[in-house]
Image 1 (cartoon, rainbow, N blue to C red):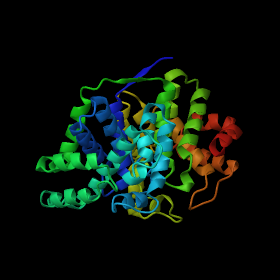
Image 2: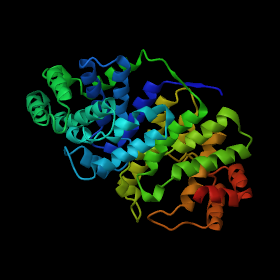
Image 3: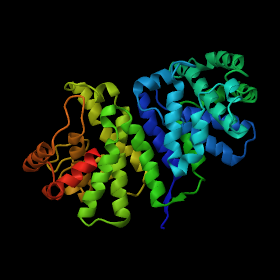
Image 4: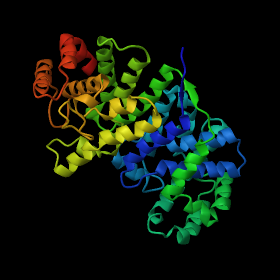
Length: 407
């Protein structure tokens, strides 16, 4: 089986950017957790591979969080009822993704107190790594109020003191001691500023070679983040997965095969990754959107495009996924590209997205019948928005595509 090179460091960093979108007002939480956890691990003389691994675990530790309301609770208090829910979800997502499955165990327990971890039958390495994520995660909660107002250099001694009081209870004493030693300098906290954070992550990744992945592993990576996106709302459950199935079948009907076909499926899985920025209050709204809400919704395809450019450099996946709200007339968004700029694969994913969305119940309407959906698609063809050949292919096997949309 052919292997495809992917810059895993760049991919994880970019996917962390997608998770950051859930925070909306408080971004880069995952990156700060990652960099702090790595700094503590380095101070403890962990092997280089372990330090890199905990960096990646830090960037992805909140992959079980899709909802903005849940993210706010995570970043506003040290402990709360229900914190374990997103840990369980995140661990399940990672376990199903072979390239990242090795990070699953520490993500599962990254909100578990040290005193409780000692009672859980897990190996010491997992116990320590999970608690290091918990420690860095909670340090970030304490520092966030002071990052933008310039007060962190006057407040960090109090943060260190607070963490010390939790040694042996919430956090492992050796981790707390290491943190207290390296954090008692201004540089530790100033490195959390966004431009320095991004620069340090680029530098760390500059010497790391690409990872060779087969097609199933690449698709597992894409599927991981489609699950996070679709979990934002019960009304979008499995939407990305079903769009990917429809798009793949349409591509096959057009004679697309091989790696290009697999990329169509991955673009379908990832087309809504930018929607992590959109509040579930907007996605679940039963009525029409205000102009401001519509503008927020419209930017999701641009965010998708930019994020995927970093993950799939040199591939058409960012274009095929990011252009799924463009039209042949050039009046779509976010680029207002028209007929000449839209590959067949873009047109396929656009039709697949509309078809599946109409077949799925939404808060503002019920599930549409197949007859209604086909009439709707045809009217969009007549208006000049959708590709007539793509809609004709779908219509010719309408029952099959409807099963893919709702099964």
